[in-house]
Length: 329
Image (tube, rainbow, N blue to C red; front, side, top):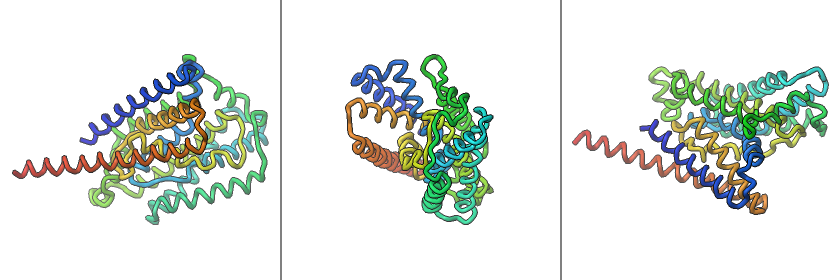
């Protein structure tokens, strides 16, 4: 039943995405050109990799609001280290970023999984801690492309088949690996059980603490990796990098069919959701819509997605109840 639900949601989202891209291309013909597609995928990569990262957490009926501040902090630390060590190449940032995020994720995991504190409150707290730390450490110092390894900046500009940027290629690889892991590996399947009913999952022997802790570590490490993506995309960073963007990632995940009530969703849907949100933003930009209304429309889409999720959940409950009544009759 749930696997069918996954597919039906993702197929529906895919067609909505195609319709949105088609409508946006009608409004702005340059949107579907090679450079337009490249810009869309480039601008989506940071949000998409973060959406994949928090998917297991949302499936387990938790949330991680610290991801955006982790992106900004890791990006600034990477740029600072690259500035102080000119011998750095592209590979060091891909190690440093995830390690910084891993530390933040481990803190969240200990507090949520170990002390059983509410994830919303915990990650809101770490959001402010990391953001404050970013302001203190950065001391209003900015970095740009001249301070970064040329090989890292070049990776951000590299494309395949003329339209596929290197960062989004990594997103696709990440999405496929995470999707296969969530579906075919026991630890991945356990997270669906925990999201559906954590107490029942614990009673049947599922390691709820371990699965929850590692999910937050994964989310943090992914946010740190997104910091590298941010540098590849913009080639500059300051203390305000990615400020206030966490709700945009949550919106992409929920719009992508990951149920906020837990137990339903896939990384594939999360990436489609990120593409859909970015396509809508591109269409609004083509129409010259003000930034305020873009944010308002994002919020409206999130509310619609939550309502749709609730309606689908009610229908599934009614269908299950009708099936049980039929079996007893």
